[in-house]
Image (cartoon, rainbow, N blue to C red; front, side, top):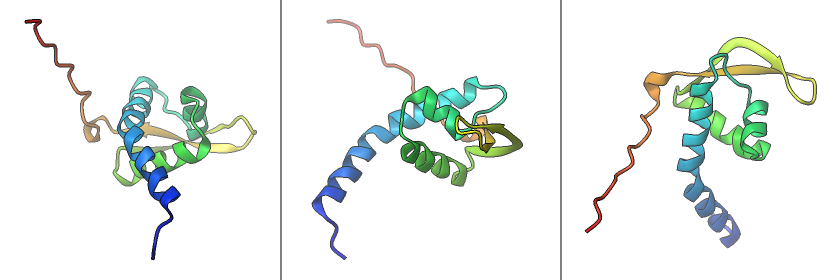
Length: 102
């Protein structure tokens, strides 16, 4: 099956921002003691539903996020699962390397 050049380009763009978005979303979950819904993450990051949904699914499959058993209302009035983070499954934030000036 041949992939369309636009699909290949879109995937390359997504791969470029994925690590940064992953860090941002994991940081939001770490800071949210009561967990978050995907709808809340969409609002906080300003990202589209499809982007957050795909990342959330990936993080759930990796065991980083899991359902708390609670729900909250979304902006549209529907119930959504509240997700929480397993800090043991998240890589620590990378340390910033500070180089001395010559």
